[in-house]
Image 1 (cartoon, rainbow, N blue to C red):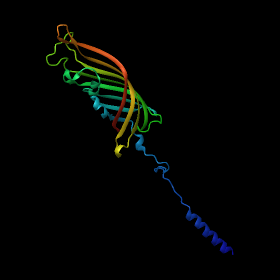
Image 2 (tube, helix red, strand yellow):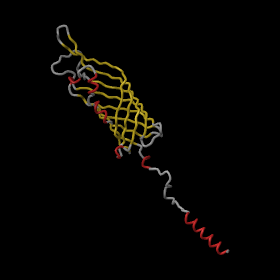
Image 3 (tube, rainbow, N blue to C red):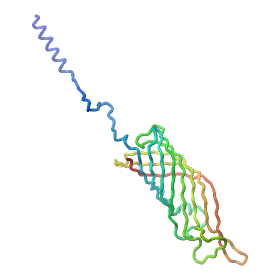
Length: 230
């Protein structure tokens, strides 16, 4: 009887041992629980192209960089040619002023990520300051007669914007290492316009005088950027 009990105990122990899986983790192996892709946390720089501004005569590249868990900095530099949209809405015919001159433009600001920094991805809020300048080679066209101090006068316009943007960035755009940045917002724009004003004289002749005016008004913002993080 004792032999039967001993044999039964050994068989039961073997069955329990066979059903128990023992896993040994080597120090060089990561724990396979909540595995984290470390590649998502190495990007601290981002270069972007704001191609939506081409319609406003601007070629602009932006650089965004990591500051803290919730903040990044952003700066941009580019070239301006002419803003056809502004010219269509503004009184005056800038097409008569000749060839536009290429100018430098720039902007700078900060970004706040409410859900913490996550490899430049997520919703953000961004106050920025932007400056753009546009001008033309000559003040008069064809045989117009000018009066006043027109020597060295170049018609044109420039914008100083105080912007506030609400946007969203997402890296896995088209399954490539390209980041998409879509934003909307508004700006308080200070626009300075320099142009020649037509004056009708008493002797039925026409002259043109330089005139500069400054106005401030709200400006809606909407755009899209493509970027490469590294």
